Image 1 (cartoon, rainbow, N blue to C red):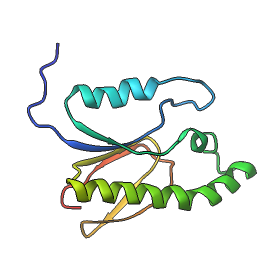
Image 2: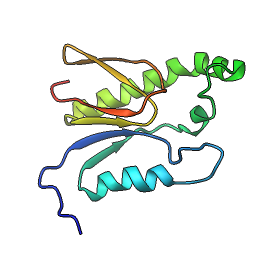
Image 3: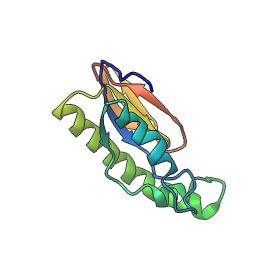
Length: 126
């Protein structure tokens, strides 16, 4: 059994339950979110249904491109609102996502530029 971390992080987590929107699954929720919680990190979960977004990732498809153009501003605004709110309540240490990227300039969270990127960023001082 792995030893628990002595230093906990406050993590903003934005990811759907499944990597495949066409299959009912909690693969990512069970393996990613649960792992963060098991490591005793404080996880603030993005309160947004990402399943429909993951059905429209192919920007070369005209229907998906239309969906992206229509929905990207909404999800961006809501994501930024929730991250800023959570960070204001208590500073976040890291942003973790399978679907979006945040832009931080001069320690300020300024935008999100889509949902086509996997990764995490540190938010110390943001």
